[in-house]
Image (cartoon, rainbow, N blue to C red; front, side):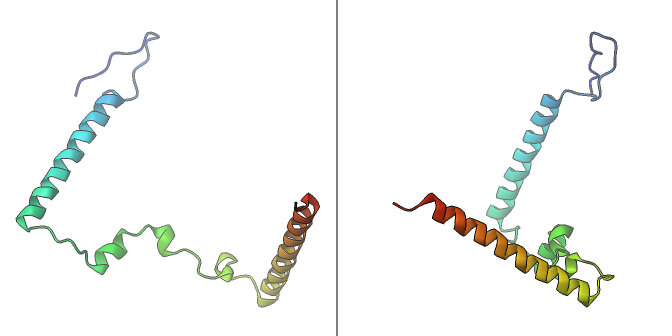
Amino acid sequence: MKQLKGSANGTKPLLSMSIHRMMDELDAEIKIQKQEAINRLQDGDLELIEDDDDVESERLWVEKYRPKRYTDLMGDEVTEAVQLIILCHLRDWIRVIMSNFAFHVSAAGEP
């Protein structure tokens, strides 16, 4: 790798090569990988359907462990009474939001 010259103020660059050169090399690598995949597909060496295990392992952890119920967001320490209070608050909040929306729609008037 070539070293870049320091800037005019005498500091060393952060990268050992320019970002544009890195991007060009990455583009070239991607093109090569695509061409290799096309060649393997034409030769019949590449499977089109992936196994479920492979797909499962490629999922992001945020998708794998995302909350499925609202109680998953609260944690284990929250009691049922607190959950009920939060649920009632959310229900009331939705009513307030919807009534304000209905008020603004009726105040705008329909032609």
